[in-house]
View 1: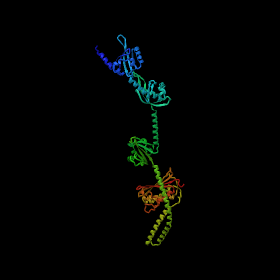
View 2: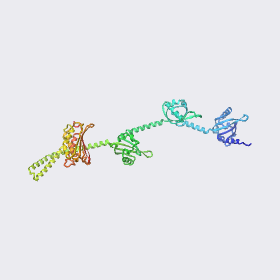
View 3: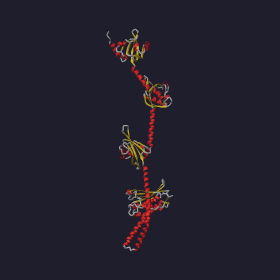
View 4: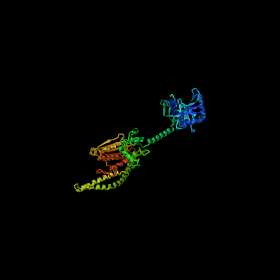
Length: 610
């Protein structure tokens, strides 16, 4: 009998279907099977397969075969029935079987026909999924829309402190899980609006009531009609991360407090010089607020470009501390407001793990106060040394002056008496006059020596210092006028009465004024100023001229006895003045710029001599 075209098409489709197709008798014999079923069960030929006993050779569990037959004879069909078949080598194969009863034309029961789908891969995937679900390190859940858990893995139970899954699946999610119930509502709004929620930070409650921070990721579960069934997702415990963040913040805050509370200026900049760190001491020392500096200014805006460049060069040399470090480099700096800073700069280069330069950090120690104190100490030491030297010279001078004064008087008297007895036209008369003049000059020097060597204490009384200055001015104004030098008085009205030896202070002021007149060219000026500093209770007298000034090499000699640059001078005026001021418990200092003038400042303590 010739096969029709339709029959050939059926056989072709039968053999090439991707799932196993069979036809069998009611008694348990296969009448036909396609190649997919043979391959699935490991049979090489159809002839061999058609000889097997279905119940014994095909079903892993013979009872399962009876169950299938019961369903088929009762319902006429079985749909998606899960059952385990046996491979030819005996290994189990899970399959999904759908089958129905075959009848002849007269309705007589002939057998069965159906299809089988290999579920091995699906089962393996299910096992993998189940294994992943149970053993993944984060908490996995499946829940209803209404707020009940359908499933949860062990990690979630451990995270939330539940011993059994049964107890956990009974909790009310909104009330028992969320620390703040409103967070559940926000979660539902987001997930139903977007279909998913990713990395939603929320606080849950453990079984013991303690809060636990989690990172929640989930998506919506739909039914076949697109209706929302619930949600599934995972929760990652953030406790350790939060703890690390707190510890990191505490460490950062502590380091920042160290930097900000340092009494020294701490600064850091990137490789371009842009400032990244600027502590409170840097604000105070350099005069710039941090909000005006950080990420807005460069180090060359603080120092000059030349200084900043030199610091970078020194950091790369071995001159101070070695390459990458700069230790205690002395630095003088002029602030933007003109104030001079003096200090020590230490700096270092910051490297990454591969040795690449990342940034610069530096510490500036303001040494201005200490250096000022050192300068004052040196000045005091010099003054003490000067005082000791003057005292020694004074004692020597007193002895010499007394020894010279008696024979000098005899010489002067004798020369003057003989001069009176000789005719003025006699050549000897002129010689005697020379002797008398020189003897008088020697007497003046002796008198100055005696003044300089005077050891008597000042006879102090309450006086108006401004009046003493005015009298000194009167005594010197004719000499000033002769030299065409203007003397200006600027006397403080707030000056208190003061205990002093009027004659000695007047002598000191006259000495300084005459020196100023002699050092000032015609048309110049001299300023006599008085003042009072109530903070330290000091009377101040300033004698400032616009004269030729004192050369720097002479500054440390001007109070030395017999040192003079004036023709005919004894070199004792300033030494005497220095002694007078010291005997009043005060100090005298000098500042001078050659070609611009000299300024003497006398400071006398208000309570000295009371």
